[in-house]
Each structure stands twice: as structure tokens, then as C-alpha cells.
Image (tube, rainbow, N blue to C red; front, side, top):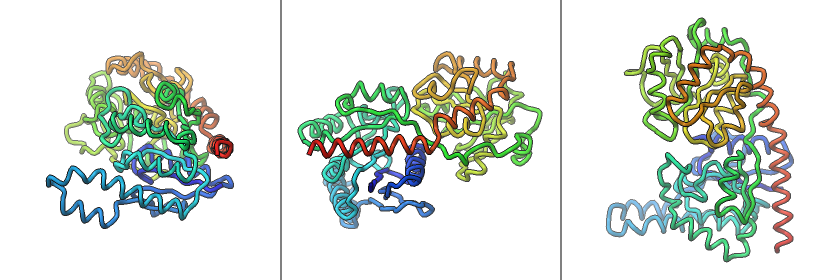
Length: 396
């Protein structure tokens, strides 16, 4: 089987990380894989193709952007990308195309229609953009390339074409599957397959040694926070600000990863490490922490939570999206009562008072090994792909 993967980015963002891990576990099978992205990846073990606007379009954009003719550029860009993608697929001849996010690179949804002319499509749903036009039902900005009108036209065109029957979806969480099945995806089918995690991504050893390596205090609770901009509501930034400044947590050492802000203005008990890409260093951080705090008030199946559990670090999170699939109260972590900051603060206060987080470490590792094992996920994807291809043959 030859598989084409269409993903807006090869490495940037959580969806790209998940897509990369899915591709990585599938490489352990007999599937031949190539990936199409907007940025490529110099350190990838996959065959890479880059999809970007042609020089002809770039010249048009240079000449007409900001003029009265600029309003026509998005359509010209979409046609340009579709033409290039069509040529690429004619050359590559895939048996199936696994689509991931498109909106990060502002790619048009018409790319999927181009894909369907060449092979069946299996779309992995990292968010709700394919049916809502936003990342999630709430706390999400509108994605311009996935406007309600564009979505209506896209799904309307598919319903009128025979190729529209050759598209189906994979949802990483039960919540996403339910959301998808109540949308345009209802007639196409959505299969539940979680994200994988490598068996190599596990605890780096002794928590004390990990704390020493990071220069953290040994006698204080360590709470790890991996999040985006502190001003971004969708990622829980404002909630983090409330929590780290709360007087009840002055004795806690917060370690923040992924923050673009400098440490200036944050409480003294907050250690900002910035963006971390090195996998070994990430494992050290998870191992050093008593638990991971996932502050997003809406999410699907976050990679950070899977990584944390795989390292034996329990998780405190909101009861939203796919988090209840992963965080089993008092077994692999804890869930707040609702999505308010006060509820999360109350639950964190209770967790710190009980000091039971160390007891959950083995459960967390066991859950990760059971539900997110890369070989198991590879087999599920491979079986799903073969089923889609066979069904496509019967519809021809």
C-alpha cells in the first residue's frame, strides 16, 4: 500500500506532532509513505513533498496585494495549490490519502476534492474545523479558509459527486467522534483511533536526579505547565495567570514550557523554560514534575497529556473533550468539577493536600502503554486503511 499524508505542517503545532507520530508508527508496517506539507522537514525519515504557491502566484501577490485586485488573490492561490497538488498525486499515485489539518497554512479545502480524484481519503480530525469552521465549539476564533459558507459549499459538492462516498474520518477521542457524527460526517462514518506514543518516550529515571538536572528544588511540589501564550483563552492562559498568582500555591514550584513571554512579571516560584523540542529534555521535565497541569478549557486528545502519562506523571485537567478518555480520577490523575478557574484551583489544592500523586505514577504509565501503544495504533490505522480501499473498489 502506498499512503500519502497531507498535513499543513510537518512539525509545527500539536496536530503536526500527532500526524508525525501516526506516520512514524505506520512506518513499522509494510506501508510505503510520503508526506505533503507546507514546510517539509529536514530531520524526517519520510519522503517529503512541499506544497507552496508557485512563483507565478507569488509574483501576482507581490504586484496586486493591497490593491482593488487583491480580493481575487485567495481564489487564484487556491487554484494554484490545487493544480500543483494534482500534478504531485499523478506522479506519486497513492492508494489512499490520510488528511490532517489544512488551516494552519491557509490551504483550501478543495485540496481534498483533488485528492479524491486520485484515491480514497481518510481524514484524521484534530479539531472541529472540518465541520464547524472553528477549532472547538467554544473559545475558538473563526478559521477564515473554513468559513461556514465554504464548509457548506465543500460538503454540498461532495454530496453530488460519486467520489464523495470515498471519504471517511478518524477521531482520536470519543468526544470528537460524537461531535463529528452529529455533523456533516454523519453519513461518511467516523472511527475511533487514539494518537500513538513511542515506547521510547518514558520516564528518564529518578525524579530527584531530573530535578537536580533542571536546577529545581527537591523539597517542593513541582507542577509542570505546557501551554501557549498566557493571553490565549483557548489554551487556558488567563486561568494559568490566576493559578500561579494564587496565595495558596506560593509553596509550589511551577515549571512552564512553551511560553513566549519572559519571566518578568511572573511570581518568583515560576520557572520559565521556553520552547523545548528535544525529546530527552522533555522526558526529564515530565519525570521531575509531581504532576502536569493541563489548563485548556477545551481540547481534543492533547499530546502533552499522553506524553505525561507515558512518563508516569499524573495529570490535572478540566473534564472536557478527550481528557476524560485519558485522565481517570484518582487513577491516572484528577479532573476539575467544571471549566472554571475556581474549580481547578480547588481541585489542585485538594491534590496538593493529599500528596497522593506519587501513588498514581504506575497507573499512568500502564494506561499510556495500554491505550496509546504505537504498534496497536499502527495496526488499527492499517486495518482502517485497507477497509477504506476495499470499500472504494466496490463503489467503482
